[in-house]
Length: 432
Image 1 (cartoon, rainbow, N blue to C red):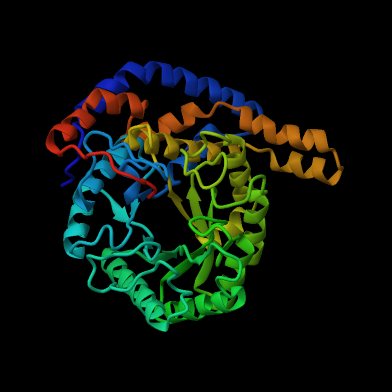
Image 2 (cartoon, helix red, strand yellow):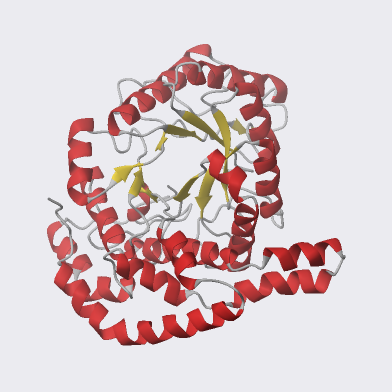
């Protein structure tokens, strides 16, 4: 029996306030889409089946490089993180999976699995951590200050490989089938590191991990343009990630984090290329203004998010064969993390729903006729469509809330956990 964190009656009462308006809005949108030859129910069914995983670390307050300002009721460990993730899933019905990060979330796998099952959650891709030192982990006594999988010292590389293999072992016990590897390796001064040899050492380490993956597992190589290394980064762009995934073989894929690119990079084109190459492993959804800001998905550039999904829908059959993983990866500095994650999951689904509305036949015709304006207008027509009734009905039919943030606030959950969980004092640098 599920142990849901919010009383279902609270959700039912809140839904009763919005039900009549939703019925009217859904019918009106259905008539509009029917005139365009689209079935609103078919679109709703597809949206309802689309899920995005939650990052376990996302339910805590993030921060800037200079400070972190903890919020009330912050989770003290992985079990309380799962409670918060269950709230997001109960209300939004788009996030049944949780992506764990080790050693941050290390606990007895059997207890983790039992806790998740009791909350109606499952575990998605697992994440290793060699971008910081772990003085309390006896299995990682060596420092990663100057790198991990690409470190000049073979002993440090071996430690990093062993940590990744331990993460896979834990993930296997949890039911996960994918490992995401992001490293902070790089250099801050010209000449500090041999650029070629560092990448060779990274590939050697990744090969050692990939060779010991279970048969049904995949490994995702995640790139990042900069930070914390500001002169060179070992895996700095999608081309390097693709090069690594190609050399590592059929179990290796590229993970696209929307914030890990240079300004003005055409991310949707990168997605198209990786689909064609058969190497699109998945996404970390967030938004960005200047760099890797990890802002709420769709909060800055919702059109870009839509264009990414336009490529996914355009290549639907090939994408289905690739089975890309979808996960949020955000840092919440000034909002309630639960509210931000609820909204972000909704924005990802919104972009998908809008992409499903694109008139593909018309778009291809305009493209072949070199009619730039009408090709653009075809995309804009789908993007401008208010699909909120589709998203709301998908939540409602799955037992969620028509207005998930409103229902969350009505539940008093944050005040309740704030009373139960000791307050956390502000600290220095808060990047997570």
